[in-house]
Image (cartoon, rainbow, N blue to C red; front, top):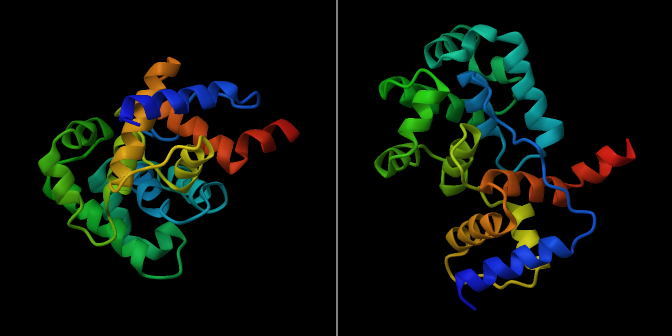
Length: 211
């Protein structure tokens, strides 16, 4: 089965789900570099709604001046990354600081500038030189600033598996391509399909209906 056939199978499976709903918006587009960096770095391996979303909103509420990278770096240096992020261990605060410093060196002050910067493969490689940042986080950064793509995670892999689609050796890239192509077949943007799958598999949609 080739990529196009797998994408068609995923689209057909999605249509078969009576309780699947397409989201009207995606997370991100904060117009606030502090929130964007925080969201992108904290999301890996954590519960998004209970851990990441709360801290991202805290950055927006408590540090409105940190909408530019320079101001966010100033905030991190004055208060300390762990205090700003309300975080106990060292690794992710260190990563947030490293990314912020990289963006400063690259002359990135706003989300619009970051969107342009992330559209170049050589810049993706620069971002991935930071320990702990790989394909998923860089794609997630791209998604947060409005670039049409998806960032496969455990929920998206699970959805593909539910559709009885078997991935090949290069699972991440294949999953990404299947989801992006299936989104087009369904008449939606990849970022919306990504968000919708994530909400469906995480139970956010069902919980919202129950509430």
